[in-house]
Amino acid sequence: MKLSKRISNTKTSATIAMSMKARELTLQGKDIISLSAGEPDFDTPRNIKNAAIESINSGNTKYTAVDGMLTLKESIVKKFKNENNLEYTPDQIIVSTGCKQSIYNLCQATLDEGDEVLIPSPYWVSYPEIVKLSDAVPVFVETNSETDFKVTGKMLEDNITKRTKMILLNSPSNPSGFIYSQEDLKDIGRVLKKYPNIIIASDDIYEHIIFNGKKFTNILNVCPELYDQTIVLNGVSKAYAMTGWRIGYAAGNSTIIGAMKKIQSQSTSCTCSISQAAAKAALDDDNSEVTKMVSEYQLRSEYLHTELNKIEGIKYKKPEGSFYAFVDVNGLINKIENINDDFELAEYFLREADIAVVPGTAFGSKNHIRISFATSLVNLEKAVCRIKNLLS
Image (cartoon, rainbow, N blue to C red; front, side):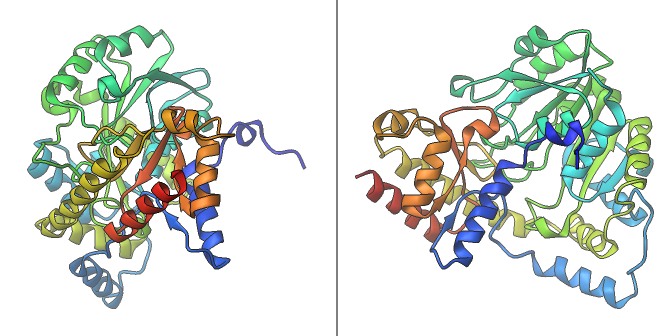
């Protein structure tokens, strides 16, 4: 049976593939330390779970509006106002099955065959695949550690063509963990003001996971003139340890949000009513539990930065947020016999040290690996010990 050209050109998510491989080996009895998945090891906070239980007991088990319960959308509006100083109305909000679906809906609703989407590299593995599933063309804007893996306005302008339809911005970044500052965003905004037909997709899913007192800034905070062309994407999965609840949301131009609603009405329809009630409780809370989790992530980040840089052949620049270490392993690859690239190194770690990491090539940066520190400090200590023993 012949499959579509679309699916033939689509890759399986590298992070999911490595996580599945680690899970399979664990089921076979191996003591695998998985540092591949971007999934908090913390439990969902009790008040959020209680809200879900209350939702079930009260009979909130039916379909909701396709774009989300009004009460949840009102909480999202308040969140944007109170935390981001951004003004939206409920008709400018859509609730989807995770932030990934919000991004997918946006691309399906706005992109046509041949449209180009600028994607700073390294990037989240699903960005280019979602773009290709919309029959559009991902255009990668290469960065490196010298610029903290961030693009500048000039870098973007050098890649803008008459076919450019969208740019995907992610801050804090998956996989690098670096944050676009106010000055960075002003520089980018200065360029994008010239191109009112380019959609700015601002993926803020790691907004709350920031270290050392740094502040999160959305591009609209420094360039409010871009309001009509910017779609803000977010969700509760990462900050609130709610990955399995599958709630994401988007805010922006009501015409684009309405088109995303139409796409969603023909795919998943509404998201889970119980998960929506839980998400409302998360957004209405005081974020004290989030603060505790972020403190732990920072401790893990500090530990990895200290210990990994002791290993000859590894260079690791400390991230400013998220829960990922994006590690330069060029030196290791040159040092280890019969290891030629980051894919072979990841396989080597899995085979010889029972550690699962994700090759950087999957994120658009060869000879790097991504290590998720959304796991316990004990696991990280064991993993570093195994790497040191293997390389010695």
